[in-house]
Amino acid sequence: MNRLVVCLAVLLLSGNIALSREPKENDSDVNYDESKVPHYDLPPLLVSAEGKAIKTPEEWRNIRRPQILALFGNLIYGRIPEPESPIRTEFEVVKADPKFMGGKATRKDVRIRFSNDKGKAEMLVLVFVPNKVTKPAPAFMKHSFNNTKSRDFDVHSMWPGRLKNGWPLGEFFDRGYAFVAVYQQDLVGHNEVEFLKGIHPLFYKKGQSFPKAREWGVLSAVAWGAMRAMDYLETDDDVDHTRVAIMGHSKMGKATLWTAAQDERFALAISAQSGCAGAALWRRRSGETLDKMVTRFPYWLCRNAWKFVNQEDDLPVDQHMLLACIAPRPVYVHSGVEDTWADGRGEYLSAYHAGEVYRLLGRKGLTSESSPPVGEAIIESDVGYHIRQGGHSIQMYDWQRFLDFADYHLKKKTAE
Ligand code: GCU
Image (tube, rainbow, N blue to C red; front, side, top):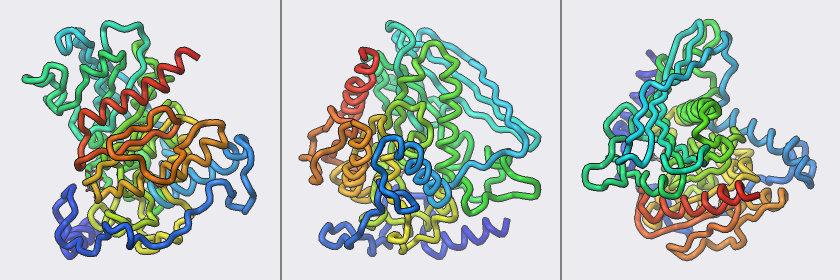
């Protein structure tokens, strides 16, 4: 309880009590000027913690990648602790509608229940499978801001190919993809500060009532939920679980990258305007910074991350290393010209620098350090990218490029 009071006091004093998605007026110290980005040196991808050069795919896989994942776990997002009491997981298809979207798809509402001696939690995953395709179908899984229990997932009354929340699922069905939605707040609150409800209590050790400094914050819990949805997909014959693209926008883009970096069952990842703690490089301090993030959202990351506020150069990682952990699986990064809070240039550079690992693994990274022209998508590469005009949203142009990227990589995979 004391912790909650302290946290609210911090938020009040900093004038950041509202959970806005937009920069605030008191953010006059935020840098948006490229000429003012400080000089920085990125931590090396291909040198181990012991100073050994990483020269082969095996060395990357067995030495460097595990080291980097451990650093992100301990210092940025927070590790998932070992539960003292084993967690029982049950899947139940609670509803199935074979006539969804005028018969184009079948919608399944899948409840996943978790329980152990410490408590229980559950999530509701929605699985939409196109009816007229050979099963199992490749799929997109989206980390969702919309509640899967709400009417947001009904078909739009004016646009028959879209959901009420605007997602153009008709396009996905037409291109042969299933679509899966996991709701971010099923297991943890949007800006959780107490961690006494939801999934965390099931993992507490005797006497524990709050995550340790290196243990999972909000984004890590959201990522864990998507992994459990993947556990379900492994049991669903309609979906090809070896061809699942994970995606998300903004905060959910951050969760997407952390999900895909850890769980190699996801075949491809799409980060839409994920910005700070997503694809953008910490060291550029352009747009949102670590300071801004932990002031507004103290527990999206783990508490160890607080130690690096205004000390980004001391971090043993930067976000290009997170993208590199997804290699050799394809990763796509999307930015918007006006989405300066998310630092589109920093998102591109992260994707560009991750290319070093893709190349080591015999894959194709981005070839130029300069960002591509606005509105030009790089699809035929294992690291894809586009920046388009406009601000912080997923527009039709973006959805279509995500589909193009998945078509290029996941459909090619069936042909191989
Ligand atoms: C805030 C936050 C961003 C986040 C965004 C969102 O603006 O500062 O880091 O990406 O919310 O999730 O829409």
